[in-house]
Amino acid sequence: MAPLFHIAGLTMMTLPTFMLGGTIIIHRQFRTPDVVRELAESRVTSTFMVPAMLDALSNASQFPDADLSSVRGFMVGGSPLTERMLTTWAQRGVPVIQGFGMTKTTLGVRMLEPRDGQLKQGSAGRPHFFTEPLVVDLDGNPVPAGTVGEVIARGPNVMKGYWNKPEKTAKAFEGGWYHSGGIAVEDEDGYLYIKDRMKDVYISGGEYVYPAEVENALPGLEEIQEAAVIGVPDGRWGETGRAFVVLFEDAPELSGNEILTRLREGLATYKLPARVEVVAELPRTTTGKIQKDVLRERA
Image (cartoon, rainbow, N blue to C red; front, top):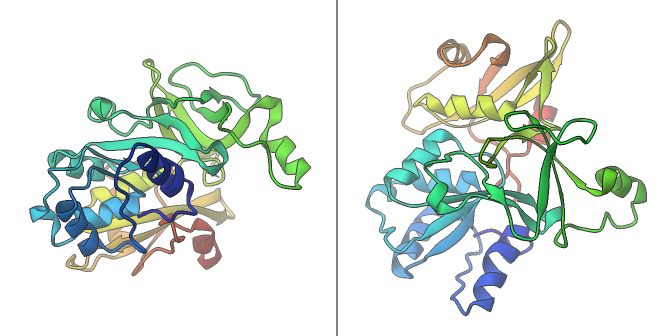
C-alpha cells in the first residue's frame, strides 16, 4: 500500500518479496474496506503501513470481524506509534514490526523483531543489518543508556550525499556519520526508543518538549482519533505547543479547553499545549505522513 516511489514500498516490500518468489499485491491507493477484504481473500502474510493506515484499519467497521489469521506481521514506520494502537493490534494477535529508518539510509537503521513486540512495546528495536547506528550528544559523542541524543548511522546502505549540494552533504555527514535528525534514547538492552524529530522539538520556558509524547497522550482520551502537535512562537515562553486533534465520527463534541483540562491528569504542565484545535482532518503527504509544515502555516 506504500507507493513504489517510497523507499518502504520498494525496498521493504516489493523487492524482497520478488527475490523470494512471493506474491506481490499492489493497491493504487489505501482504502480500508479493500485492504480488509484483500487480507482475507488473498491470505496476505505481511505489508508495510504508516501509523495512520494502521489506525484507520483498526477503526474500520469491518475490523472486529476481519480475518487476520494469515498475517505474520505488519511492518510499520514513518512516525511513532501510540500505545493505544499497539494494544489494539496485540489484542488481535497481529505482531507489529516497528522500525526506524529513512530514504537516506535505504530505510533500515533499527528494527524491532515480532518476538520483542510486547516486551519492548514502543521501541524501534536493535540495529538493522548493514547499519551501524549510534546515539550521540550535540558534540557527536556517544551517550550512555537512558540518555537522550541524536541517532546517527553509517554503512553501505547509507547514501553518499545530496545531488549537487556539497554544503548540505558536509553538514549531514559531519564526522563521517549520517545525522538523521531523530531524537531517541537507548535502554540497557540496546533497544532504541524514538522521542521525536529534532526539527519538531520546541523549547517552552527553557524546557524541551517532544511533540510525539503529547501526541501519544492525546489519543488516550477516548474521543480523540488522532493528533498532531507543533511549537509556535510565544512572547512569554519563547515557544508553546499548538495541538490539532481529530475526533471519532461518533464522538460527542469536545472543545479544546475540555481536552486540555483532561490532559492535565497525565502530562506535566510545561508539556501541555497552550491551545488545542479540533479539526476535521490532518494534512498528509501521499505516503500518509502528517504535514507539520502545513500546520505551522495555519498557526
